[in-house]
Every structure is written in structure tokens, then in C-alpha cells.
Length: 113
Image (cartoon, rainbow, N blue to C red; front, side, top):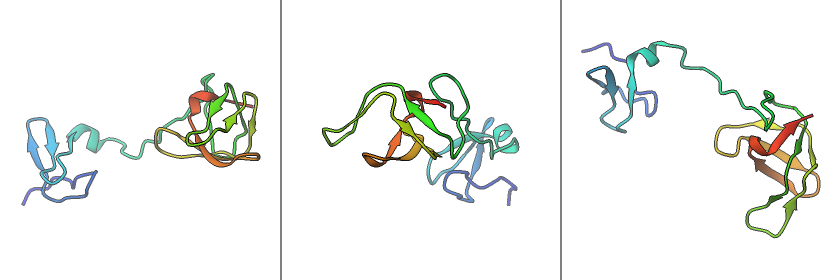
């Protein structure tokens, strides 16, 4: 039996080498052996519109009017959002806005206070 690592995506033990890549036959995920040996728990840095690094618990301000999907409500420019949480995904800020409730925002539309 070979000593190849399990698939990082689906944790399958049936990985195989294909040239310089490792391949998972169950989910078709491909990755390089060098990337697997490196630091795999590298955290993603989320930045605001001005390039400042955001952290959990920060306070930010919305820099443009944002329509709320599925309703006629609008998050106005200048709205202050306190105690944000950073999450993975396209909308990388999870927050609660006083007048609108819980929602997710993109970091490119906010600036850190």
C-alpha cells in the first residue's frame, strides 16, 4: 500500500499520483504534492475597500447604497455595522444591522472604522 495522503476535499483514501499531481478518483479533486506538504491551514486574509485587514468584532461602515436581495429595503451609505463576524464564501461578513436584522455583506463594500 502506498503512503499517499487522503484527499483534502472528501478525505478519500484512494488517491493516486498522476505526474506531479495527486488525484482523487471519488471526487476528481487534483492537488500538488508540494502544496500538500506545505502549510495547509493558511488563513484567508479579508480586507475592506481601502485594503485594511478585517477581524472578528470590528466595526465597519457601508460605503455605498446596497439593495437587499428579495426585498425593497436598502442598506444606506454610511450605515455603521458593529461586531462583524468573518466567514468563508462570496459574502464574507456576517453581521446584524439594527434596522434590517441579520445579513451577509461583501467586504469590498465596507470600510473599517
